[in-house]
Length: 89
Image 1: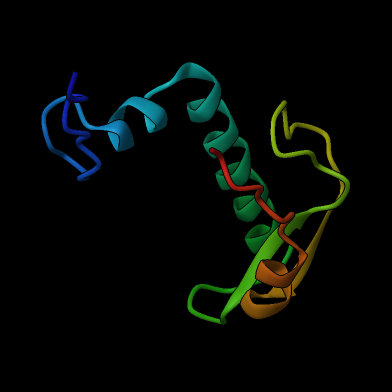
Image 2 (image 1 turned 180 degrees about the horizontal axis):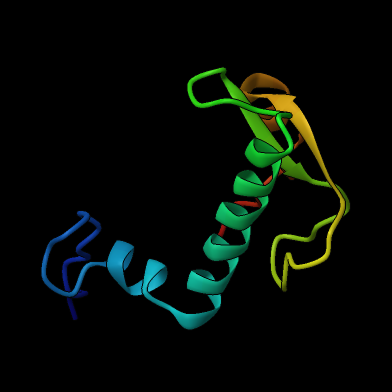
């Protein structure tokens, strides 16, 4: 029996992208990331277009980001710190 074709594309009808980014938990996590960056901008730690990112220290891949310590890292350094993702089989 053939599997149904998967729809990955952003904006496509019933896409996996929109299904994931539309989840309540993911919306809350994105909101927390935006709030942390705004707070860092207000404090003068980052500026628009400076190539810096706000890193949540000690945050896990899932769960809330509220009230986590943050620090400013370059984009490259922050991407190096991301946890390795295992292959699904």
